[in-house]
Image 1 (tube, rainbow, N blue to C red):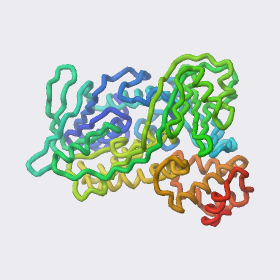
Image 2: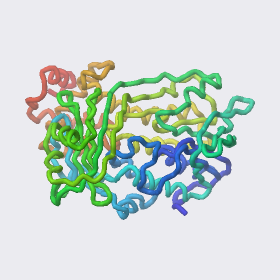
Image 3: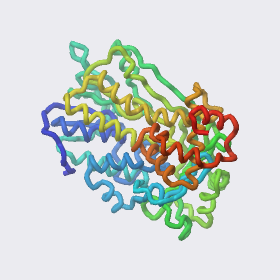
Image 4: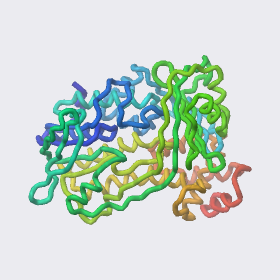
Length: 463
């Protein structure tokens, strides 16, 4: 049985989670502290640990768990990092043992005390799923699809109609709360309409991301002692690459292009795409590498956010989490960590009420989503082809961050501060603290910075 350290007394009742995604599994974990029974309804058959699940199309591509995400998993599942490392995952210092290239600038490497957890998505998700399934009262209903919600006479959601995909039989699961964790394909807006509720405002930022992935066995010493190389896209070169060490002695490389610049999947075209990145680190690491597996392709057209917190009314007994609420540009690697933060928010609300009021829940969830959403959208708007309002604040912030990246080529304090923000340990505002601003100001401006960017920085008092 999985660890129950820190569980509150079970108070009975039944919670239903739709989707065994990372968000759904983490929701089930915190609900198990409050409910005698938790049922996770999942369309897919559950694969063994380390095998890809069909419903995770990006599961075959490179993933990393940011420091805050790793902290959350270790809190919810004591010993989780050690368990994964024992199964082949790699734990490394985020700045000292990984290479980061942002805005075309290579951050200076130095010990930071921030830990990255590198592993394939199936290994991470598989261990989480095993831990959750081992909890008392938790069950996973495989190959079942939610068809509709049921309500009581007062309009409260009282359960969900579920169809077994093998037999076709429809069964109604009565529940005290239903949590939608079905991801980008969530039918929640349609279900709300069927129940007579208004649809939420949907924000959409078109990014046109395309991924391709191959796994390799690198020659000895190809990356020295570094566990990963992250090369971010720039407006001048909207291509990115992520090479990470994973279980089995392999390295997984995902390359991606923005705004329809999709990488080829054939090995020769893939290697040429990797060689076109802004720095040669990945191309050099691939010299003499042995191709092992083809992860295929994945496309992500747009970041999408449903503004449930703006609705004037919402049925009680119904919540949503993860990509069902907001899905981010995957270039920034925020998804799993953002899901963990949302689950911890749900956990806090469950301390006050067995069924958190929907209005309060979505307001709190929106608050924690704001930071990664603003980070991703603000960064995306640095690319001219991405449509959206480029306020003076966004322009100035992007220019400042670009200059911070340039300064971080020699100043590891700035590099660590930036990784704390993208690792979701600190809010973006932390980068504008007086001491960090002084460090940015005192660094000579990069010759790559256009005059318009320098002018925008000046508006922040940083030029």
